[in-house]
Length: 474
Image (cartoon, one colour):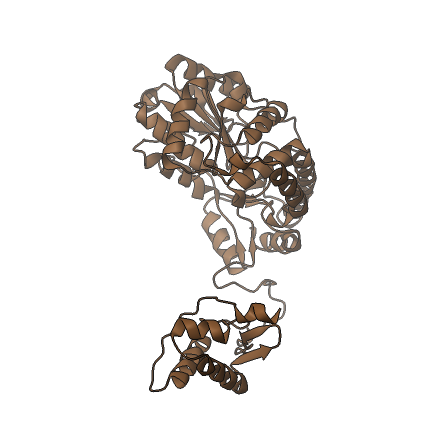
């Protein structure tokens, strides 16, 4: 094994200065360690490799290494090569303790908050690593060689086949593998749809009064205007489609199963009104089904796409059920759009990694995905119940809504207090978001509320985040 170290040839960028090669090499190494460019534990090239790279005698490098070991800059052990020695760092000054009896149990964070209850992220600590690895091994063992080529821009057929079965069973989606396009996250799918719709002459797409500006920005980059649909206590007023400014839209972007962020499901009559508008006008409904698997106190609301698969583009994702870092999402397209979307996707050659597609296909086919979703549904429901109970105990007048499904709840606040509560939470080291952060610029402000993502913290952080939230509620 010792010979392996002698041939270790990692690159090491050094600028030699000074009169002698040995002294210049030592100075360069000291400076690299002192500046932090070479971190403690970094393994250095063998004396033979570094001598070849620098064009100096091997003895020159060996002598420099030996001297720096003696000075404590480096360490050398048989079988482990030469490494940068551990270095002590100054201990930061202790923070002043909070005054006795003070409310701050969480030290205010300068930069990253201690806790986060922002919506939109699942508990990343619950990612099923062992099951995912098991699925990856099985999938890669069975994968044909051609799977690792460029392939079909729609995505691997193994994944599209099991997705079609799963979506039909679990979400009521009418899907065939050839009408599914796998994409690198929801935003990627929305970008592709924006390109295709703009190419078809669509200049305006209606959006909900509350939503994500990153989605609106994506359509805006394609030159598409986004007028807002009116909103009332019963949700998005889809019956307004086709009237006034909304008469010019060629599509509508919606979250009908669980409106983000207000939390309600679109009423049956308004679901029907949206589909009727699409049929009459030839428009498209872009259905964002971002967390449809998570429901607690009601029967699941099926996908809107089931009412008319030729007028609804269904967009789903693994970002909430598994993890956003997988960059796995999918579109179920009307037949007349498949070729155009596939061409747009192939044109930018942007696709999810083949290994993750194959692994997810096996994860779905084996039943591991269903088991994971059921387990997380129980975990998130317990958190939801704990949140409701804690808010009722600490702030009885605070109404909690949007809790029948999903990974977030809406906490109503007294008028004019939203920003002050968010600031107070930040001082407590808790990241929160108000509902007006998600309000369309054309929509007047009518409420103050918090959008609390109870799925976001890890198990170890959950109780601290909940306690910090209760401290800042009015």
